[in-house]
Length: 383
Image 1 (spheres, rainbow, N blue to C red):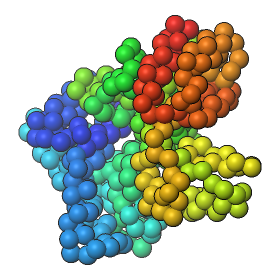
Image 2: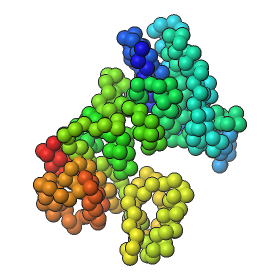
Image 3: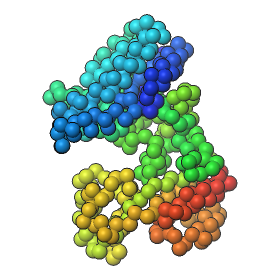
Image 4: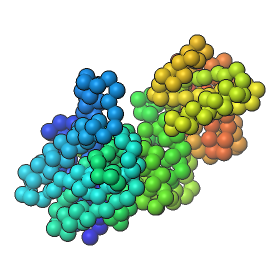
């Protein structure tokens, strides 16, 4: 019998009605002959609420006790989903915390890494013909304390369990149909990309695409675990991520993210900033050394908190656009058409960088959505 891991994020289990819908979908999948292990995030926004609660009694909450508090969000979610499943069929589901599921982590509280998975209880539940409903984002440390994995840790939990259990794939059930070729909020005609390889997914995520968490995709790539992304309401996976991209295709994806530009005066400053980013685990969008050093960061990384002393020179008026696909790297007929289109926007472009099958544009925010649409349209004609 095939085995899949299904991961549900907080937005998909935000209300009792959402939880019941997920339960019906999971139960229907099991009844057609698939073993399903469900991994669940905390209900939407509850983790942030717990952090605020902790700060109300301790301005700088950290460590073991904060992890004990934060882990309760997923425990509520798994209990609710198991209750919903058991209302459909008696005793069909068993909820398990990360520790009960055998998620072993290091001892770095609030940002732990999975070091081992021992899913004995999970296998027992499956062997009984039941559905394990497992808390993501958490585990137990090597010294027997509750730990949490940090933002996006539920994605990593799902992939780690899939590898340990020998699952066919991990299905990430979201409120979207799959990975879009552009943000449909800004680009008409954005389409679902049916397949990506791991490198394409990681590249898009590196420039702001909200697909999955990077560590989860890196783990999947290491072990060759296929990933699927689909809609929790329809149960249909629109995008598959594997090590084998579709042949004869043009990716043609456009990613746009708000940027903060940090111009630096000297190469020594550049080396200092680069080291600080590495120590903080922050990946810049773009780095340029040399005589005119420049660092471009995601606005969402809140660079002012880290580089407040550069506040006077920070530029927060630009976006970074990344275009992926054959021809985006500056060679071929598509590249010629892109160059012709960009002539109209030269006064708004701060940086224009070509790589193999990739174009990066750093340009004024007020035109970025328009440029995204035009680049996407050009790629759509080519594909």
